[in-house]
Image (cartoon, rainbow, N blue to C red; front, side, top):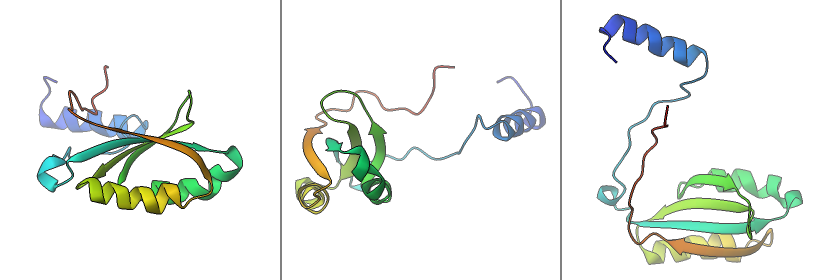
Length: 121
């Protein structure tokens, strides 16, 4: 940024106060933590059922992102697991036994090409 520490901290504080910076975190290496299986799970939930299931989904540690999307499915979960058994246990517990979910499809990440939380600003 080309700033000494004091102006830099002042600029960061202004950005936080304006709500531009909403949090700070460390980007962790999932593989080194034993979470080598990345799965995108697309699901269909009726709008009437969304409120009852969304809080449950958002609180699950395996779900690292949850989106409303367009297309054949209306929600997308980005999930991480240690292995296929871990995934299947989650799938049985969350997807197969939940009558609020009317359809699903899973896509497994074969290779991670890019992952970042940086924005193009």
